[in-house]
Amino acid sequence: MSDADRPSSPVPAVPGTPPRAEGPPSVNPRVYRLVVAVMNLPVLLSGMYLEVHGAEHVPPPGTPLVVASNHRSNLDPFLVARALPPGRFVQFMAKRELFLPVIGDIIRSGGSFPVDRSSNDVPAIRTALRILAANGTVGIFPEGTRGGSGGELHGGVALIAAKGRAPILPVGISRDGKRWVIRFGPPISPKGGIKAVTRELGTVLTDLARPV
Image (cartoon, rainbow, N blue to C red; front, top):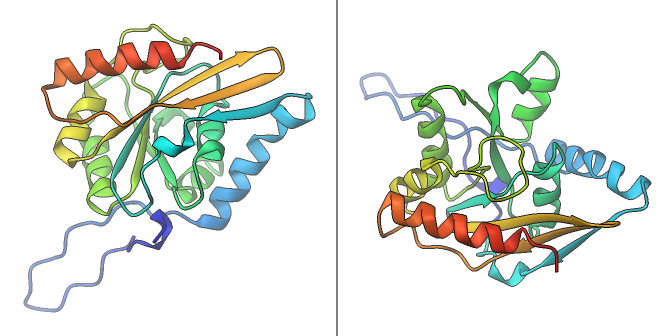
């Protein structure tokens, strides 16, 4: 079962029964695939290409997963989404400034959701946990802003993974000439403490972000 096959909207409550918990944001597979394809056009039209390494490390669909990547450019979410094997629909935490009229609707249709980077955004964390509880895939850039690699990581990735009982799939993005390179590393266990997991993730991402 792919991520998009999981239930996405709450069922109306029967009178006299407690209200059901809010479901995770839904993914429209057609919109998702269309947006990913369109946003990868700049890479293809400029004569560049995408090279993927370590796809064997990606757990099968239907299991909770946190995808954590370094952040180089605005194309990063779409490159990572394109590199994932079929069946994995990654729902990114995206900065709330992107959720403008029309554009925001398209982003939401793809399953992504806003986060306020200036504060401890509890609603965004709860949304991420609902996605994981439904065996979905949450995408996060732990550096917070674009910077390539080596930036200070936020502990939110480790916290969400621990609370959602989901492994962290580290992803390195690099560019070498006409090559955009995506490298998946072995999943990292969320157990071991927030600080320890964050340190391990930082070390792994720095290595994966180096061109091969």
